[in-house]
Amino acid sequence: MNKLFSHINIKNLELKNRIVMAPMCMVMADEKGYAKDWHEIHYATRAIGGTGLIILEATAVESRGRIKDGDLGIWDNSHIEGLSKIVNSSKALGAKVGIQLAHAGRKCTAKSETIIAPSPIAFDDSYSTPEEMTKDDIKAVINSFKEGARRANEAGFDAIEIHGAHGYLINEFLSPLTNKRRDEYGGSLENRTKFLIEIIKEVKTVWPENKPIILRVSGEEYAESGNHPEDLVNIINLVKNEGIDIINVSSGGVVPADIDIYPGYQVTFAEKIKKGTELPVIAGGLITEPEMAEEILKNNRADFIFLGRELLRNPYWPLEAAKKLNQDIEWPYPYRRAKI
Image 1 (cartoon, one colour):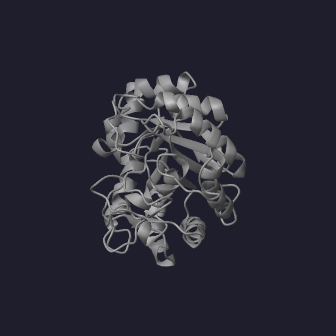
Image 2 (cartoon, rainbow, N blue to C red; image 1 turned 90 degrees about the vertical axis):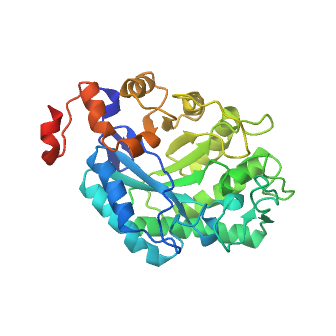
């Protein structure tokens, strides 16, 4: 058995393989964040293709939390119906489905929205300067994550992922590059982590204990005075006992940076975080070959492999990967001729 196609259980989440579809903004929702038929087809296609866990794109817990107009929303009960259709279609086709709960913070470019952040610092000259969040703003956003988790459970998702990466709101609190607050939410690493801890605690009041919570992090911020893998280990160790089950390791997005990207460029960050936190990790970054994915797993550098652009190019990558690795898996019955 190739490890890429081995089963794994995290709480009540049983996955048929270690292949994870990374959250990728599709910018296809309507102006109020509602899912369309397009989303249902898009995700169901990856389920047919054999992906074990599909994580829906960044889904805003507030209207002002959208990265762009066209992002999915989960800030209102009326969003549940459209999201449920995505879940039901993909699960019926053999995948498990999670959703990334997100807030863009200072990187919101949606029209007619108030931009908020821990500190009034713009990402760059092309972005608006955000308003510094008041204590009431902080409470409101924490509650919006709680309500987003409640709606996600009602929609039938198997897991939620809290988006703490890529320079969006939670990451803005965690990073010394973007958090210049002088109150209990800024300064020390422990204070900068307080916002995330409070979100997790509130989410846990409505999210079932038997369903896992994933935390996505930027394992490297590519700036000398920013967070590095060792800092993320310390942050995760502060929050993991609040109810984090899996860490999804990405990088960058906090400040403009010139990043040298190549196949597997983020895997070492995941490896350090796995070792330092003793939590299961999802690793990825321009991974396209099943042999490379297998190496990462077999050498215990990660527990899952996320694919992004590769699954956009080829939604049937898992089926082809099994063939390349001589792994006998069940193909969708109508596609059985292609297995030969």
